[in-house]
Each structure stands twice: as C-alpha cells, then as structure tokens.
Image 1 (tube, rainbow, N blue to C red):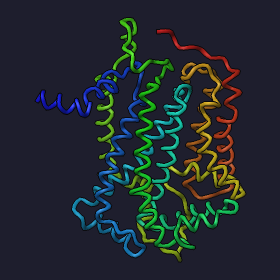
Image 2: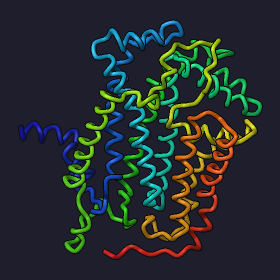
Image 3: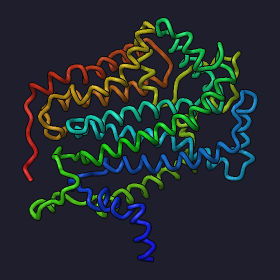
Image 4: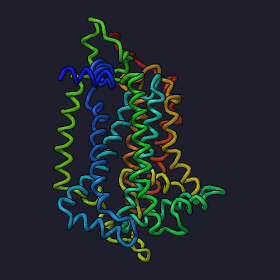
Length: 401
C-alpha cells in the first residue's frame, strides 16, 4: 500500500497538496459557527448537483410536458418526491447559507485588504447563484414560473437601444413561450453550473493565498507555522476546524431533512402553492412575486415609481457590493472594534434587508410602498455614507497576540 501511495504521489501530489492547503493551513482560533458556512455551501452544492442529475433523467423541457413531467417525478418515480424536495429545499438552504456567509463577511470585514479579490469573486458567485436559481424556478412551468418570467424579462426591455432585441434573444421568441424552457434548461443544467464551479475554484485559491479572516480582524499568515508563543491563538485548519465543520454539517443535515419530511414547502415560502398549477397565459395571478431569496431586490424595484430607474436601483443594490472594499475607510476590520456609527448603520442595513424581503412577498399597498422606499434609502445609506462614518468615527483596536 505504501508503494502504491508513493507511486501515485510522485505523479499526482495528493499528500503534499493536503498537507500544504489543509493540514498546514493556519487560522485564528476565534473562528466561530459563521465560518462553517463555506463548508456547508459546499455540502449543499454537492446535494444540488446529485439531485439535479436525477431530476434531469425525467424532466422534459417543453411547454406541453414540463409541468406534467414534474408531477410524474413526484407521483410515479420511486422516491422522486424525496429527490425533488431535496432539490427545492436545497435551493433555499443554499441562499440561507450564502446570506449568512455574506453577513459574516460584512460583520468581520472579510472584504478589506488584502481580500478584495476574494470578496469580488464571492459577489460574482452570488449573482450567478441568483441567475441559476431563477432559471431553475422557471423549469416547473407552473403559474408563478410563467408569470414571473414575463415580469423579469420585461425588465430587460427598459435598457435603451438594445432592450427589446436582448429580451427576444433571452426568451428565444417574441413572447414568453415554451422556447424559454429549452434555453433556461440549458443555462440551468450546463452553462451556469460550469461557470459557478470554476469561480468557486478561483474563490478557494484566493482564500488560500491571503488566508481566512477572523472575528478579531487579525492578519494571520496561513502558510507559516506559528511560534510557540502564538500556538494558543493560531491553529491548523486540520483537524481543529475540520471537526467543527463536520459538527455543523451534521446539525444542518438534521434540520434539512426535518424540513424535507415535515415542512417541504414551508407554507408556500420554499415552494409556492400557486406554482402547483400549470402555466396559463390567460389567467393572471392576483399577485406576482419572486421566490423569497430574490424578494428584497424586487421590493427595491417596486419602491421606485419609474420602471427604468427601478431596474437601475435593483441592479445597483447588487453591484454596489463590488465597491465595498474601497468604500470602507476603517482602520480595523471587525465590527467588534469599529465605532458606534458603523454598528448603527450595520443594524439599519440588516433591518432594511429583512423589511425589503418581507415587502417583496406581499401585495403592494400605499403603506408598503412608503416602507419599501424608507428601507431602500437605509440600504443604500450603509454603502454611500460608509466613506464618511468609517473615516471619522473612533475605533478600538484588537489586542496584540
């Protein structure tokens, strides 16, 4: 066995790769549960790929058979209901984990120097996850799938000069039809997954170059063995944090399968009741809205009276994240040591996101529009005023170690 292992490692250095990037990859001991989100995202990605491959075997991407093929998976295929619910709940679980991952990055300043590129690749992955989630949402071809597609594609038409032509290219027709299904099916199962997997690889490479951030905001050389004085504060990733990630994975799987077996639709949040009806171009739903993880952006869109500026605001709400490393002028990374104004604006940001998420799922009302506008202003205020309040506020500093 040793000879075989030696022969393999001479040609494919698995042992040295493991030693360099896991066993001798050093992190600060203050890493908490929020730092397990990356590992959990990997786990859910694996589940989504496996269940997606199974669903591909039975799904038929045509307007006539898409909905019925999904129903056949649920009713006629052995354990098809389980696989589909695993995929549906997995999609929402993915975004819960990713949003906590982003929350952790904002809380502990994981976007600051030298992790700018790490942060930017993460934002690109987030945008592509929204795209793959949206294309997957269309595939069942239920009522909400059809009408949400019409609404989303109509946003493209507001782009000056090329909007109409771009909308026709995306949907493959002059109106939303079964042609959209074949296109979105190709995007969902081939194009977007390949790009996301490649970007995740780049994201991990960036992480292993600059090292993992920590709640203290202390820079740690990830490839340098700590001195005896620092060994209490700096630990190798394996086995200490691998074990923690495994514990988090076990807890997650218990919650995940509990939801699948007892609350798979989560009262219409994970899987809308109206989407259990086949698409009908002649019957408009009383309320059209996206799935919950895209609802904050939809609320921003509805908060702006002009359609073009609404789309601009919605897109800006996502793309402003790219500029965060240069907007933050604070001398410290962690919110633990930042000043009062950073903490106030951060709380307002979280409140605004939750508020927008709720308003994006409910019917439009005068009070709701006013509230959405207030939350939109609070959301953008966090970023636009950041160069001022992070520069002039009084901060404390993490202890030396």
